[in-house]
Image (cartoon, rainbow, N blue to C red; front, side):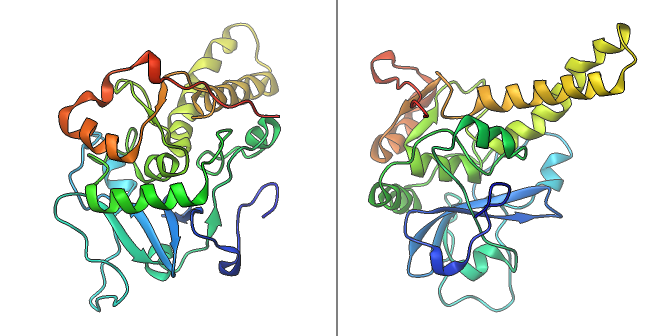
Length: 258
């Protein structure tokens, strides 16, 4: 992996890795957890979904499992109740390139990777815990799929960190969802500069600054509206609707990144 690319070879994969591949002309990426034996557990739109009510519901289709006329002998048939599935690595990648999501990156590296959904400031838990969470959610589900608040990247980040955004009125953990929102936000925020300057470079610099600041503040490693939730407790909270309740005694502070 390089500074600007997280591309890796299959030979370097290990259980507990958060992997992804770009889909739909690099508009969006699909994320999952590699659990070993050439298998990936990932969250898809095959289960129940809360739509955005916008054109994005038709464009962002990376989390819809690829359908083939020849069933794969390795992949686990998806459940009708939820969208967490187990696929072989080939079916997960669907012919695309393999990338590994990075954890505990420095702020400088985080901002250098301008595209969201490739890294985080948050620290990953041990690989065995990551694999346990993924396998548990394969059986019990991860709630309703939502492209902005509960998508495949949110699933993978939860498996890696155990952290969840508990305020349902805000964005989820997904860096690429923040990027989709952050771009237009930066353009809107920089628009007032036209009243005081016609310098194109100044407006571009401001827009870039707003975009970077929004990504940094929304990263799961920097947010205060998160809590550590055990996988076993998560399914209970999803069932009872208690996931939106913030419990200060369980709140975790973001890790310090050196």
